[in-house]
Length: 368
Ligand SMILES: NC(=O)c1ccc[n+]([C@@H]2O[C@H](COP(=O)([O-])OP(=O)(O)OC[C@H]3O[C@@H](n4cnc5c(N)ncnc54)[C@H](O)[C@@H]3O)[C@@H](O)[C@H]2O)c1
Image (cartoon, rainbow, N blue to C red; front, top):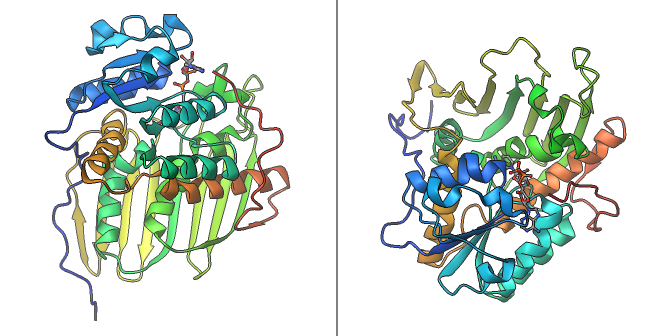
């Protein structure tokens, strides 16, 4: 006999931006993702951007006119010393981002950092400590948490709709052809470190306080991968938890068969199951006993999810609490992601957690 709460027929999955609190926001690093997602989401949800700055001035061309940004700052200092700016959104790659996060915190600003949060756990922890010392909020832009199907699943899981989680399964049934010739190909274990980090992070959210015990991962060139592509497209990541729960993330290297590409997921619990898919194939449903509920969704991960991460940071500042997407909460996702990159270097031998807390010796990341 089920002890479940009543079957929820509707779930509030939308990003929330607090009423009556619109601090000045500055954005550093006006690259592809800012122009395609941060700025459109902020414009749609009424989050005004006071100033932007990019080391490459050309990158900021047109954003004032197109997105109603207040101004283009003439230098990093110009943006960080602007008293009207309370929150700084930093969207460079991690190697350039770490010193920028430190500088923004030193200037007394709350920070939203793009993902992956850092190149190693000790550096990530030092940034968290720095924010704590200054009583500032430090959040990570894991915007997938606000993709409508995943957000719905998170709410259902938190409400006990499927009981205790037994397993999580994600399939990245997607072609990575779009990475050819991009800076992403220069990132070691790109598909795990830079891409699957979103899938590792949402799994971390669903698994809650369960402790991951070991990670086993493998990335490989798929047989159908064109020779000109430089980064492996296939991947398998398995995360085992101390209580026996288990999560698997599988990248199929699907090429050229995926139209539209799909990223299905299954969360199996002691009392039910959630099935869904993200990215161009959005749906989510809850199955329990003989009943199935399909949830109506609107919006997408890109760009609406980007209002979710910023909205949560603004809410946390307004309510003086830790944001749910805090760097502290994201640290476990980062740790599992980095752990998954290790066995990928060692023929899939499992890595026990927690990782030895040493700074990465030679992480090579594009410094763009
Ligand atoms: N879902 C997501 O949230 C998502 C999606 C794509 C990319 N990303 C992440 O966003 C980050 C940026 O990716 P992108 O594709 O936009 O890269 P990009 O290269 O297009 O943009 C980075 C920008 O940062 C600028 N920059 C570099 N160093 C700087 C510095 N010291 N000061 C000021 N500006 C500086 C560059 O000139 C460039 O315009 C990466 O960490 C990537 O993983 C996240």
